[in-house]
Length: 527
Image (spheres, rainbow, N blue to C red):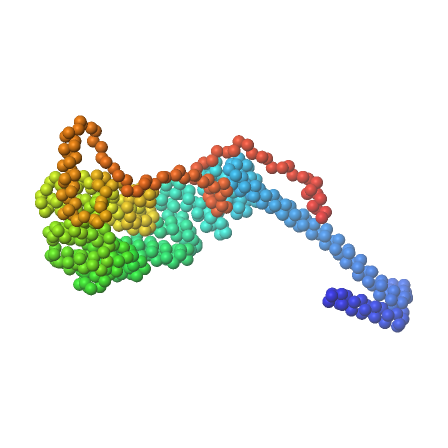
């Protein structure tokens, strides 16, 4: 509406000017080179207007002729860039579809048409990886490194190629270079962190973890930092006890349930004669996660204490929090060392019906130490061999006697206190144990019954003909059925994926691109 109003105002002003000139007629006379031209003012104005319009048209034509080479060059460059872009698009789609031959052809075309295009370099690298041309892929990635906009992508590609050829030193250098360019880059920070952990460079690992902090959630960062601080404290425990104690306490502030940090802090505080603080730390850790290392450290807080004093301390710890089977094992161990055999038997009584390996081994030691009964000790050791396993420090299918901050595969904080193979749902059966009655019998009651049952079996075996030995097995839990896991193959790779691990065979059948339409290009020129 506003535009219409302005248009009417302009038209009105022009009409007013024309009327004004028409009401005031006059003559215009021009004398030039002996000629005299006389006309009215209105005709003179129209003539001047015609001359101006003709001059503008002539200038437009001349300028178009002068600029035509530049326009033609720009058109050809734009046309070449569009063809290169189409070649890159076609090649990336071919890589996702697994058509190595079409991807190679598209990469060559893109390199010819758009050699400076970043995606053309990526297409060249991925097509070379698909055909197994690793040197060609590295050349493409090195060309990316030379350009600021593709430097990180090129470093990632070179890092993966170095890992594939097992060149750890080169992979480390590429990752460190990527961290210098972008400290918050996740894959580079993780690679540097793994390398520092593998070299036991805990200070360097902490620096790498701090660089990765923006890429990690708060809980993961705190846990990993606590693990690294504990690892550094363990490395300094025999050299600089004060620094090791401070590091262990700092780790506990980040992860109070980290058992190795609690045990180390308790031991170092006790060595510094800070017994109350050590006791509080160990008691808090025992409440969260009962562990034999905590019970042993708590029992030995006072150096040079007698076996009975250690038993009293374990009883105090278990009185505050029973700790389940770990509390019972700690009580039995301390009682056995103090030669309180009745207390040791009573502590293990709830678990002798279905003993674990450690329970059976302790019972064998009790029988051997108290009565010198080799027969009962061997019977319990036989049960220990076939009994259910106890929790242990486990990571990547490896069982370790001690906690370690890094697993054999290089994962940080991978070791967990759990029953080995528990993650696949495996449950060991109960062997040679009769169904227990409702109230759990004490050890003194259970052993005579076991002797009677064993004697009855021997008499039956003597009366019957010999049969192959076979252990009676009564499973406590139905074994879990393990279903096969289907393999999932990604059909399309992300643009920043340097390519598949294995070399793909070229697809023998590929659809060639449609021939270009020359008339369509000619029609586009006149649009």
